[in-house]
Length: 296
Image 1 (cartoon, rainbow, N blue to C red):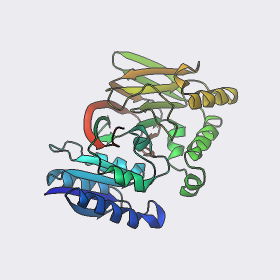
Image 2: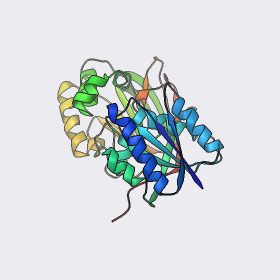
Image 3: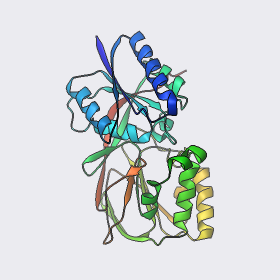
Image 4: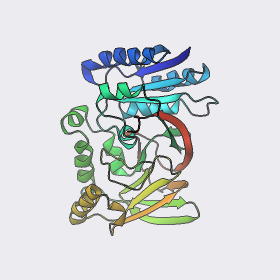
């Protein structure tokens, strides 16, 4: 009998989290899975549970929660010989990974998708000694995004991140960065560097319209100089999907990137606080299989 593990963050989705996990259990049981349910209670629980699922050769791991829960779950796949398929039920504010894979943002419909026979093999990123599913941000803005309150995210959704980001852009100084990518080097001052695996960042699905979840590339943006006026124009470019063409943005794709600075610059990884620079980034091409909706 096939085995599935549901990893649930009970604090996500308010009081509905319990109902969602029971529904997911029924859907998976109908598909012939023997289901184990694991609730997270503290940091890295989801990672530990996923490691157990790999070691015990589970066929499927389902993450029910926000981007943080998914990030921890994905990290349980690191250096594992056997990878279960991954199911995603988004209960968070932004849910970029789900957006990029066109997994329904409605949790009940996403749970129904777990019965799909359609699987997408996607890239995963590696930052130093951890994995990430979508985005790494570097700079004061990146650090501030980790502190956006739950109340703000609940009230404004992804706009809470945009609001905080714009506030930081107009009030903080850029950092000296040295960025090596493949065989090239960029050196200069920047308030924000982004390395992205998919087309969706912060809930904005047009950031990189031509990015694919399985293209084996990091899509990178170096913001060079944003005055208040340029901040407005960059925001418009962001919404229109043409940020990479903005005059104050350096855009490139790479498979390997290192970022360093003489200053203690913070990072944000999949919406969670990340390490201080320096960092090394790479792509693990088509590394995991994710259940996605059936193709019409």
